[in-house]
Image 1 (tube, rainbow, N blue to C red):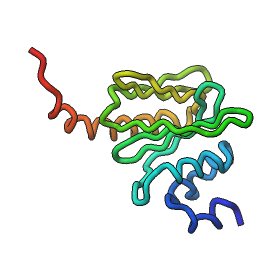
Image 2 (cartoon, rainbow, N blue to C red):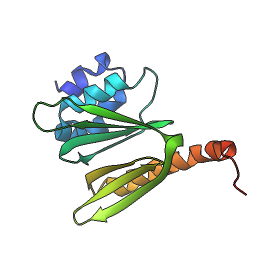
Image 3 (cartoon, one colour):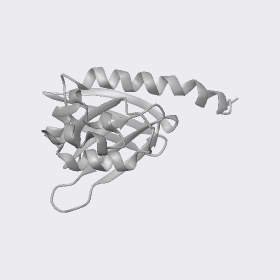
Length: 149
């Protein structure tokens, strides 16, 4: 039996390894999925997964109702790392095509997180759903922002 099925009961977030995400597991290996599973609290549902690269590191972006988590695993023996972005802190979500692949950009007030080398067959539609989730939390943020004169 494959790892994604026989280990499912041990996962806090089995949606990271469901059948539609088998290609993510194949592309990224088990490490990033385990890192994401350990980083997300029990009960937080992952709605979107997108595979790409951050710099020269393999990366997976997981999006929940309230945040985006970018897990990256550098080449060599360096440990994997996670960037946790609350969707309320995101100021823009952008998709750009670059030849045979594309980039998903999440901008915040102080940083720009770019997931490169995203496949075109998944990237644009997932980017649009991430944008919709971000727009859904924007009214709550706008209500708390001071109005400039």
